[in-house]
Image (cartoon, rainbow, N blue to C red; front, side, top):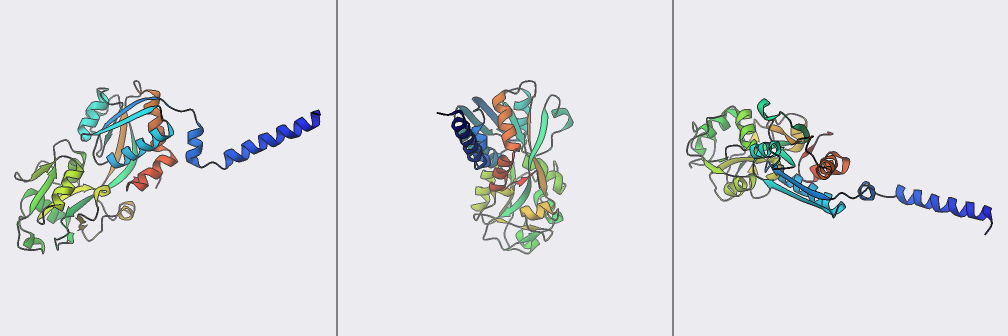
Amino acid sequence: MSKSFKKVLVSLLVGASVLAFAGCSSSDKTALKAAVSGEINGGGSTSVQKIIDAAGSEFTALNPDAKFTYSGTGSSDGIKGAAADTYSFGCSSRDLKTEEQPGLKVATFAYDGIALIVNPANTVTNLTKEQLTKIFTGEITNWSEVGGADAPIVVVSREDGSGTRSATEELLGFAEKLKADATIKEGNGNVQTTVAGNANAIGYVSLTFVDKTVTAVNVNGVKATVDNVLNKTYTLSRPFLIFYDEKKTDPATQAFIDFLMSEDGQKIVTKEGGITVSK
């Protein structure tokens, strides 16, 4: 084989490799990187769980030797667990208090709206912030007082430590004033199913938990949608946070966090109903 022919052959092979790589999707290119191995153990907010679980599933598909788990135990638990190294990372659907931050690196990976939900049989479609505050504090107790049927209002709220509860109480201005006989449920999913099963109930959930089993009422005449959170006309919104101790973070956990913040990770945020940090 002549030297000139060898040079031509090498050039063709290199060119073919470049073209093959250029034709890869962003996910394919991610897969071409060195695979990650190790255990990634996160925990915290249930509001973020759909996004985090979906991101974890995609991450482990790209990295088969990595093991991923996430426990939806509430924002406060996620903060405590990340600080105590019980979790390799934590998630919250509320801002961290000053005393909770020492030692933790905090990043916003998405934004979310908080939807006020009622049973589909309820004829009430709009409530003001003032009416909502009075409902959750017990000043308004019957649906007829807000244009609905003559029926008692069943208030469904989240447990202490819930980021969704803290954010809702802060945004509506009734912190520490929830009516004493409110029905308390742990997790967005349990609030959703409780409201779906009671024609007189009202509760609040992450926007990602609104489906055909419940109805999100308009607040001050504004519909609870991603677009309205983005244009700031729907003001019941909050950040989704991920946090970890940089000094203790292992390579696998750091790789997952980097993936979550990447273009591919942010596509998962959108797919699961969240609002990307890039918007």
